[in-house]
Image (cartoon, rainbow, N blue to C red; front, side, top):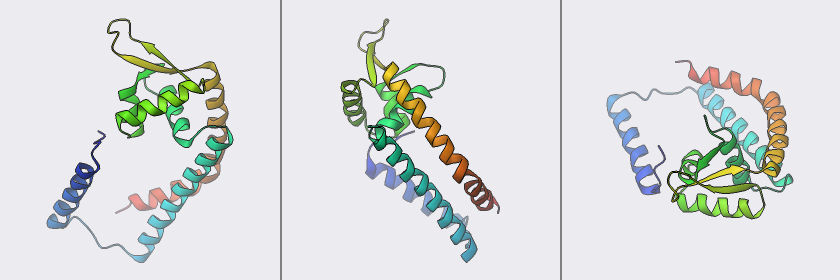
Length: 161
């Protein structure tokens, strides 16, 4: 679950780290393990950087791409609430509202009021938004096919105790 307050998130992480250090569940890592972790993180950053550039090239912000993907990929629905979008993107509700506002202006998304509860607002992709997303997803899949094998090997190595 997303915790909007950064101070509370940091507190939760620090509490987990303190609890694990008291129980001795942190093992000393070898130089090779640090190198694998650094290499895996580097691969993730390479993919994230590629993703940001691909979104910008398509005329979207990186967060808009992630929003379109989150909406289209939300299980069982073609539209989601702004609260669900905020949770999927791990951002504050007001940030999701601004993101949706900008995306509606660019005709990537539309807002729809719920039929049962008119206070509830859903967002869904427009045909234009779907077309851009399809092109970006195919570009991302090609990049994953390129980076994926190395990431898989690194991840598998990191999971071994």
